Image (cartoon, helix red, strand yellow):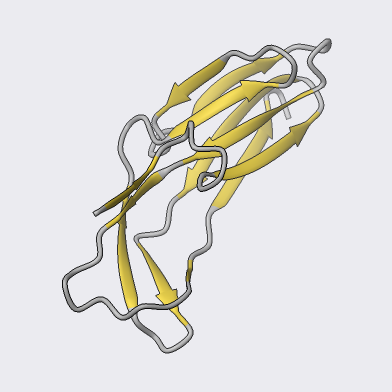
Length: 112
């Protein structure tokens, strides 16, 4: 297994939010990555594999990517970043290569 932590600035996924206000963040997680040749690599996500950092604050709040989460992004921060980690679960016969997957992040401004 290969773990990617939300604190790993090189390997984590990173998404930038611009703006402020109350938002609800929902993440649709893939169950696997797929290579160009069709090889599949299972993925797993734990309750602490997502985090939100308000721009300029330096404060990182972990959250469960399986559940929607409400955040209040302050005007003075002007945005936030969402970090996503996870675990790849290759087996002994996993073919080498480049694997990709799609992550969907839905941001809903509260009251809209």
